[in-house]
Length: 111
Length: 114
Image (cartoon, chains in turn yellow, red):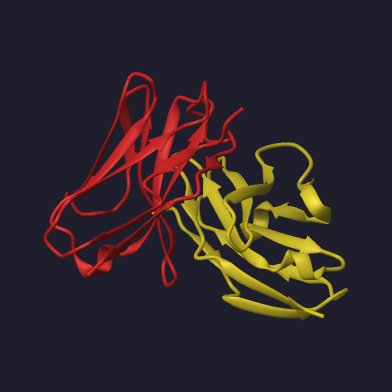
């Protein structure tokens, strides 16, 4: 069965630190990959997505992710986090079945 | 455009009861998916409807069911509630049935089972 693994359950960073959240998916065929974010008290919203083309995808708020097919990975990055990036981040994969989400990574950014 | 709306926002039920949750997708969106969100399990897919037909179903017991109406609104029903059903139930809509389409999420219904 298709699955998504997010390696980090809770990440704590200081402001201005660099961020990388890991995401690995299992499906070997054509896959669409997404990162969603859930800010405290808000709806889940799309950060970025990949379904074809340039494997380096840029999203909102300075986030980017790189699709590495050989590693089945789609890690999320941001060079310098801000306190407002405190949220829960979900990696999501859809291939021949609908969406499979990872369990989420909670990011806490401290001043 | 109005976003995805879910009613009610909060619900308290007791074990054994049944519950119906409602979701209104963004206007023009024909696909509606339901998810259960819990702290330990993250987001788990329940089912997806497109044009009134269930397209996919997650790994949940038969107590969980859903349907979609001709106006794309969807309802989810849970019968014989158990304590473990306490969760945030999220509805998401998207324009078409292609998996590369972005999903738009509602605020969720917080269900507490006592």
